[in-house]
Amino acid sequence: MGTNNNSKGILLIITAMTFFAMQDALIKFIFEKAALYEIFFGRYFVAAILLFGYIKFRKQKVSLKTHYPFLTILRVFLHFIAFSAFFISLTFMPLATANALFFSSPFFVSIFAKLFLKETIGIRRWSAIVFGFIGVFIVLNPNFSDFEYRSLLPVFCAFCYAASMTITKYTSDKDDVNTQLYYFYLIAILLCVILYFFMGSGQLNNSNFDPTIQFIFREWFSNIEYTWKFILFFGFAASIAFVCIFSAYIVASPSVVSLFEYSLIIMSMIPGYFLFNEVPTTRTFIGVACIIAAGIYIYMRERVRDQFIATETPVRR
Image (cartoon, rainbow, N blue to C red):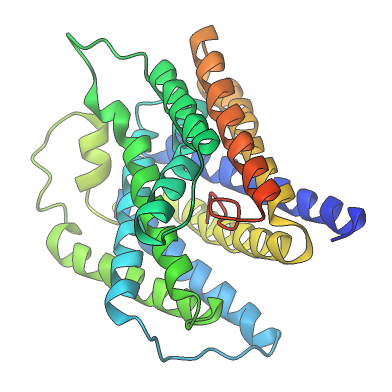
């Protein structure tokens, strides 16, 4: 890939990360008036319409046959669980901290690639993975006598997301991206519909005044006159970010553009400071530096060995 293509890819990645940061900030902004899976449903529904409209506009074909039905369902379920955990974490955790912890996903991707895809990982990359998890430990700053275990939600998100992306890489040999995209939105929307019948009327809301619990179990569409514009934006943001990321990984070198996904942490600090008065501590900066350094080293080693594991997979989708 030429330098111009790499520059274009970097611009596309930064654009995508900006939309993700805006989405996360707005979810944190409205969570006390919206329901988690109401947001999921609206986001998926709007994004599906826009993305498949884009595919039709580009005159691309979508094969409805998947060669891996069970793995496809598992992949979507893991992705669904992952971002449930992440969006829940935004209700009590600073934006930059949540996104920094989420960037442990390349470490999990490398581990899963070794275990399930039989990829070769040398001692240097193992050392980088350990160093990255030390960064996670520093960011979490655990007090084991009174540790807030829900702080692990972004790490749990990274774990599930990495498993989902490992499945994506395994199934991509026979299922193209449009097929995977079709089943992703079909199954995700179906999961939302099922959840609506179980909790959409607020029947599981036990009047707990914990804002996080309210966010999960609140009645859907109870403040739709206020939330609809935000949910519509989430769908647009997801669509634009997906197209930008997908285009970036096509026009530029994955090993180059993937490094700029870390711009999401910086992008998250901006609304975090201006909207929520969030100022990362020195300890957080040190932990984030360890996570980023480990991730970059893993990418560099993959490039040197011409063996791409984490680098082929966008960190946010």
